[in-house]
Image (cartoon, rainbow, N blue to C red; front, side):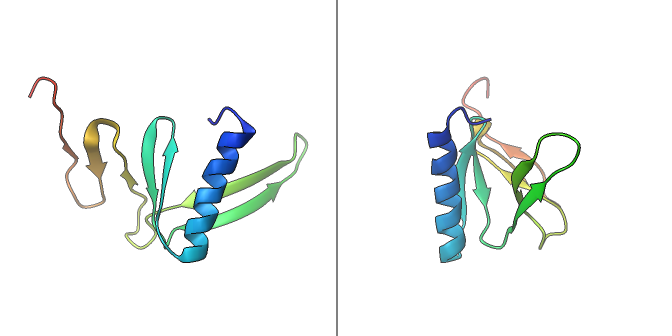
Length: 93
């Protein structure tokens, strides 16, 4: 979770700029670098009910492959549908 409005603004600006240009966005969330492909399904939803009202930015990735996948640099691992998990580590290998 982002700690400040300034950090949220940086992430939203980077995502908006990439969406506008039709290019992938590289974002850092929870200590991991996350790639949002240019063809990701991005939605802004307003949720209201009995509790607090929420404005939610939802990014769904990997629709073309039929399942979501994650690319990150934490531990230099990458997992994709139909592929084995590959990790490289400098410790103990």
